[in-house]
Image 1 (cartoon, rainbow, N blue to C red):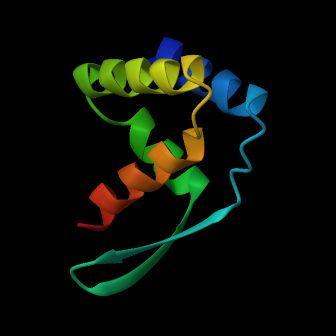
Image 2 (image 1 turned 90 degrees about the horizontal axis):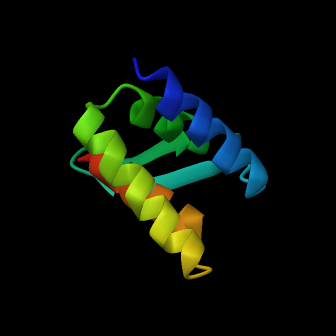
Image 3 (image 1 turned 45 degrees about the vertical axis):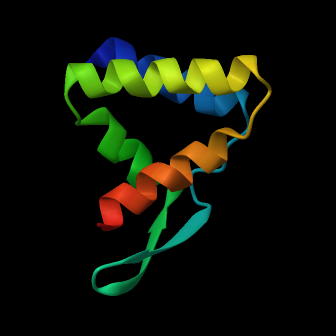
Length: 82
């Protein structure tokens, strides 16, 4: 577990005002999947160091361009649902 990444992620999402209880609905192989933002955050925290680096870089790029961080979280949820 990468404590540094986890702390960074928690701080980043808090600063962006992301509601961890927000529901996410995505289609998967078994049909409609329901999860929360927190479920996806927990998934991010247990991925490999390389994946965490890519996630952090993507969040930083989205933030730099004033993009929607939640859109990327929903994209990751789609991957989890598959």
